[in-house]
Image 1 (tube, each protein chain N blue to C red):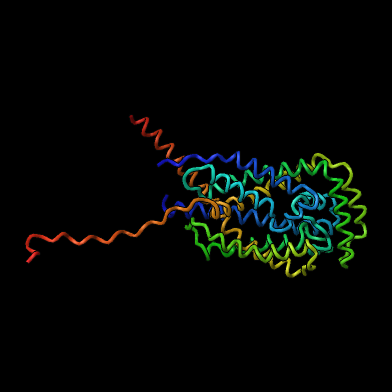
Image 2 (image 1 turned 180 degrees about the vertical axis):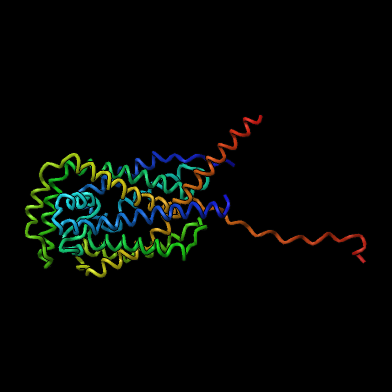
Length: 175
Length: 177
């Protein structure tokens, strides 16, 4: 696969991911706005949509327009860190690299959140708001570097397979 | 040499069922509050199982596929387990709110009402919405876990050895003198 082919695939996946992330973050902030404007039904729908993936304890959520966000502080940190990672991605990795970053980097950047989360669950320390947000954001920032690379590799493999199949069909027809 | 096509479904079913079970059980499910531990970890395990059963080298794309399948299976198992365990989870939620209140965190005054309301019948529409969202998020987390799993457990490509230095030419007949 040519370098330009790889770049086009990475850029397409990048743009799709940016769009999805924007919609996701918008929904998180939309829920309290709708609740504040009296659209309780619509707000409840968004809160319900996020409920399987977050405890949504109001005391652990940022307050926006007088109502809690649809996910907790740590989750907001993760998603905003993910968005920040997306912004950094083209500058740090470029759009033609398919090698995965080192797993050690992922494990290292997971450690602060894992320690903070485990300590909070075990009641060792109450985990301040800023710590939860920052540790979540740090973890979220590294995620796009694995996710985009893996997805690009997947789609390129599929394209290569389709191209090979078409080539075989053409060769068979020539014979 | 043709790469053997990986069999994604079996590792995904095994790891996804375990991840979904852990995500749905009371108390144990809080592991997901730590980096979606059960889902990411389950997908990484699926990648390990896939690497074990596949000859050749796995790509990050293989990890993405098996991870996504693991996440979806995990979401389905989680939601199915959550139905009979809802009363236990609600009671646990009530105790958690009491504990958070004891730490001085402000809880909404209508918290009891919210918990009582959620202990009622869960409409099929909300159930399906929850299933769809959790499947989407778990699939994405699973993709991530699968890619990380391949990075850790997948066989690495052998390092290309540097080209051997050219051997000196054999001495010719005139070189002996």
